[in-house]
Image (cartoon, rainbow, N blue to C red; front, top):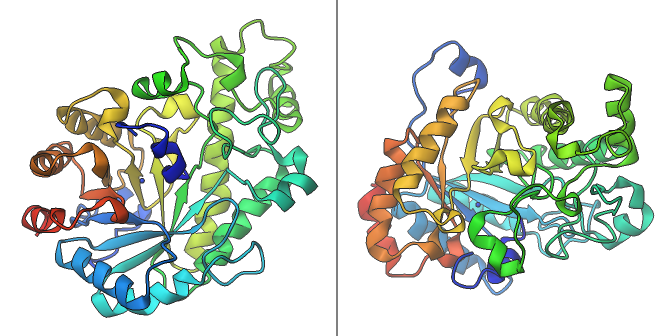
Length: 373
């Protein structure tokens, strides 16, 4: 998610310990993952190497073990590549710093959103289509950057797989982190709807994706049904819903996980607690860990919801991977950090992940250090 723009629109509301066990270890009943705390980190062109070193040293001292650095935002790259315009070689800059301070480095990439002008112009057929037949490349939902691609287009699947492959090839990174590995929100979180002056009391076709030619033909081949032509209310059809869940899950399990594992990298994802609303059945994914974005204020919930939501998501997991509860720093008062951490851990989390480094005020670091260390 370009969380900067999305969260800006929300006003007052709004993703070095031992590596997590492999899925095989978890399935066989190995010991639970050690506690680990993460932080999402966005590029900052004004930072020098010394600035980065100071920030990451402070974070490490406060108990942050791993950072997730945004290196591909659906348009531009922040690492050396010939696939996209390179804004800055931030990844290469942070590699030695993370090693020096003893912190894991994971590459955070946008997955199903592509807002690269060249790709949108040359490959309009790559993009997801809503229930009104509108393409996300021409009419994105909610915000301009919501240019989601079709999960069943073979070229899209190859494109996303190559993105993971190119990041996993960096020897000095610890893992690849997937963001926006889903379809657009068919129903926004409750607290966000007023910000867009909409009421979503059910699934409406203008927000319901993917009705691309590729998805419709694949579903018809399986069921004999064209969801756009043959279903009076597609949102009520269980098979059509499951088909789209599986479209994302097969991309993750069959194409993205293997690419990371070829290079012995961890692979994780930022995921939604209300997974049904973004067609993101992540409890079936064969990732090493999940970082659900439990941004309680988005759902009009208090901090006790963190325990409830973490416990529910943990219970659903097929492979019992560790969950690191994602906390939205701007929604937390100084005195609430300890309670947010406690609720997450009581829910079964193996740690927390904070969004994001730029939101942590100087006075927060001693508080985090007391809680996390």
